[in-house]
Image (cartoon, rainbow, N blue to C red; front, side):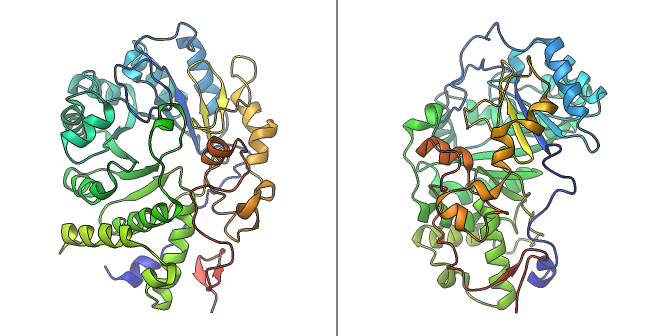
Length: 401
């Protein structure tokens, strides 16, 4: 496949329905109970379940409300903590599937990640799972998860999931401890097979406050590396909406035949990651890049906590209401916080003046986490508005000649 064939596709996937009307993705934190003690944990997971968690009946009602958003119904992901900590997990999956939802689960790399449990998820109606891989070796991954044996269980569970018919997404939290290991993680994703690799740019909340932050220039290098990896594996990002800007800029430069390293001012970290990736992928078939989806916190996406609080994302602890008091449909469509986050004209700082604000908008979660203002500039974005010298037609994702 040639680069020109790859470029014939749209660079950004836009939702066909109005995000003011319904989300594309709903994530429900079914519990905070988890035996792991991961260094970045948003949920600050606990060993025991909270007695105030949504009950089976309340969770079933929630899923029925999510299905009532309309067709196509939002993708519904059950996360945690460790969802296997809930004995009603398979009952919940069956209820969600019966309501017409596409169900997925995000389990932890605990001893519950067995072939029997994964087969039961599939038999109950789950279509996919996501697993975390934060290093290419047990030493790197287990030190991040702070429990020995998690790497091996994750790899084993990954293989089991594919055997029983579940699609697998692999998530990697990017920190200073694994920056240079990213090409090796990409290699493992290619070897074992996954529907998606998601590079998660850390939001400093929960235990993540203890981890060192990347610089905006390093983030830019990583996002361009993820773009390169996209011709080897299906790659995307989480909490890095500026990857959509990177995608448009890289595609524009390729269309115009301009070297991206000098045009974008990429640094030594990118050069190292690209060199290592090229060595790993030498001779591999080129695949079509996965176009990132145009969603953001509160914009096509919503998070519901284990006790029913509705947040724009799991990394922005600003509640828009509780599903025990109001339906999720009403909260999503009418809450001032969520409707405000869907309006790019409310963005402040350089995000508000950026020509990419409608397609990017920056990580609202990171802005809130680091500044206390959900509408402030994205702290980890290195781009200066108007500095990219080539115009892009956002209707076609092509350069304006």
